[in-house]
Amino acid sequence: MEQGRAWDGVGPYASAGTPPDARVPEQARGEHTHGERPASRTVHRHSVRGQILDALRSALVDGELTPGEVYSAPALGARFGVSATPVREAMQRLAVEGAVEVVPNRGFRVSERGPRELAELAEVRALIEVPVVLRLARTVPAAGWYALRPLADATVAAAAVGDRAGYAESDRAFHRAVLALSGNQQLVQVADDLHRRSQWPLAGRPAELRADASEHTALLDALIARDLTVVRTLVREHFGGADV
Image 1 (cartoon, rainbow, N blue to C red):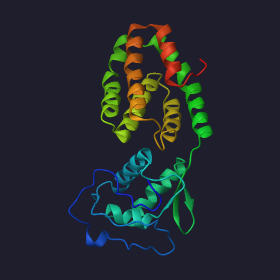
Image 2 (image 1 turned 60 degrees about the vertical axis):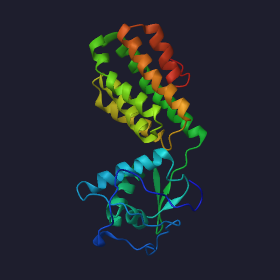
Image 3 (image 1 turned 30 degrees about the vertical axis):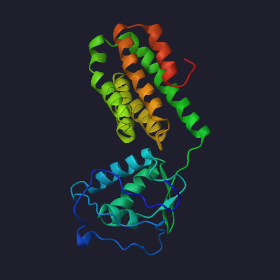
Image 4 (image 1 turned 135 degrees about the horizontal axis):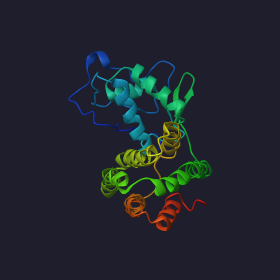
């Protein structure tokens, strides 16, 4: 997103207008608006914070929220057609996850991730996930891997149409399901958090996403066949040459 360009909003929240009681002034006292304008999108009152959180996560993946920029809760709320409160609550959650940082009296700055940090995240993910996958390759029956086929197919479908937010979610869902076969929920939670952090924003051109998605299906084929040599090779490639 170019400097100063208004963000068009995110998420499936199209509506004919914004409820009068949910409007937020364009210039919120003490908070920087970053050239923001209201949009004619509203969010249903049911599970508002959860919907806002999902929308913001999608915007982070897509790069619609620019790393290093500051965004105010009132102005983002105006775009969604809600008060600043659910936006601020969602942003606080994202701050805990490391996606944004609080800027007192201004709003929230989107975290910047340089090549080194992304490489470190990939390395830690590999250290956690690779040994588990290799162990599961020796113990999980073919039926267990067959059950994951729809999740792998979902990553392929999302990558094929360039749906970056959809790809990010389906990619994490596939990895969560693989690790869940270990029965260690703490491992699943830690690995998913690292995975999510590495997706803000989601790197890679469309062709790279399609190639990454194809590795999921190829890995499943090898796991079903219990071809440990191919599994080891694919896992190393999937994590960028991790030493396993």
